[in-house]
Amino acid sequence: MIYILVLFGSFFAICAILGMRVGLKNRNIRKFVHGVKARTEKAKERGLTMKETRIEKPVRGSRTSAVAMQKLRSLLREAEKTSARDDYAETERILIQALTVAPESHEARAELAKVYLLTGRDAKAEAVYIDLLQDRAEISFYANLGLACYRQKKYEQAYAAYKDAMNLDPKSPERGAALGRTCMALGRFSEAAELLEKASERLVRDTDLLFLIAKCYEALADLSSAEIAYKRIHTLQPYNELAREKLQGLASV
Image (cartoon, rainbow, N blue to C red; front, side):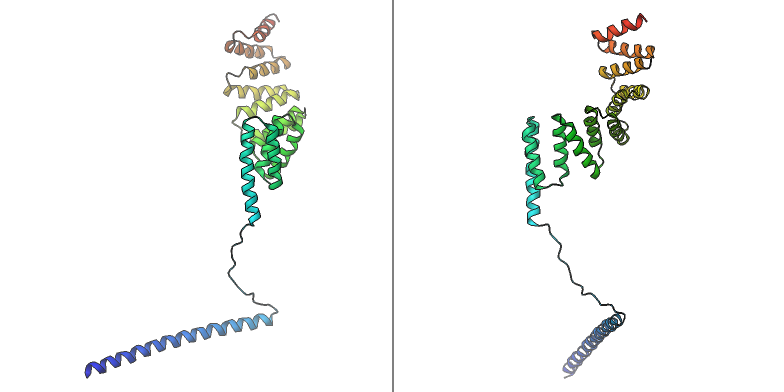
């Protein structure tokens, strides 16, 4: 009998506790709802409205866009293969097709500019590199723009492009050599000699570079420095006839 009374007592106690928790929860819910209603009324009084909130689904790219990107990658791979075979006409055709699929493709435009440069269409290459540099400042773009301008004898534009390339890659002897050659074309022989000498410190066996250095010193009437450059060529290439003739001529001065 006592056991039954204890059991019933425990049951009623649990029910009472649960009832209190439910009542408290309902009271909190009523308080929350009342608060929302109050804020809504205040917002309406101020002429405001409370926006409905909902979970937004992530926006996926359109199926057409995904297909276009897949097609672009396929065309770029194909263009890489034809370029490796030096089939630039076919490479150009493929890249133009790629740009009809994705007109803003940075990679397709860059590869097309290279094709123009490799096939001697320097004005077209210049235009594409100028366009590319509006979006991204890359060393190779500046260097190739410089080459395209240099070939067209636009030496001031070539100088500016090579200068930008060198500023981004100051330790590269190739950048200094390209800028030095451009300085020579502009008649800035002192600046050219300095740039070429510095490049020669890294490209120690480049005799073409040494010939340019010697020409700069000859233009500056610094014959002793020119002689040193020709002697360096003679050391590297003992049978170089031009270097031998230059040394003989300087010896007779």
